[in-house]
Length: 235
Image 1 (cartoon, rainbow, N blue to C red):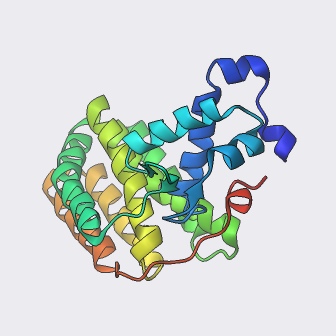
Image 2 (cartoon, helix red, strand yellow):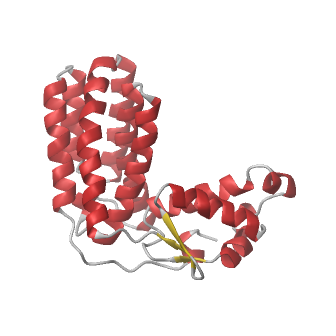
């Protein structure tokens, strides 16, 4: 596995930092790297067989997204959002996602509804399956539903905002979530999709706000323990 993740010299010189960023980001979003996990430049560089300079660039990119915190004289850590940050993230979602579903209801073509239905079918297939890999896939499918709504809305800026908000929400849920309700209820996704299919923007907005409330209600202040860097990256 390590050989598969090592980067050829030419790739390391052109885009290697992006590949490291993507791998770390995926591990954070899928909750394989827990909040507070130390991301040593030396350890990450050794795992990917690249220089610390490339690793530093990846960590800085993640810090801009709020997923990594870089502390002077201590290094980089997976961000450990405070309860106040968690509230701000969900407050932002309440501001942004009703606008997204309104635009999606207006813009959705039959092919977009088919795409949503395929996502929901995959989410349903994964629901209830056991094992770490199945849980990771379910988390990703849930986030993809929200990101697909943003894509259907047709606003690339809002889509980028949602990409960050979904990632940071996953981090908050990793730290404070009490149950699988935090990963977004499949039934609630189905109801939102049905409202979009009929073009009922008002209902879709109401359902989305209820959905966000449901996720946030499931949060508490008890942190969860994670696994080490090598295991999280499956190297």
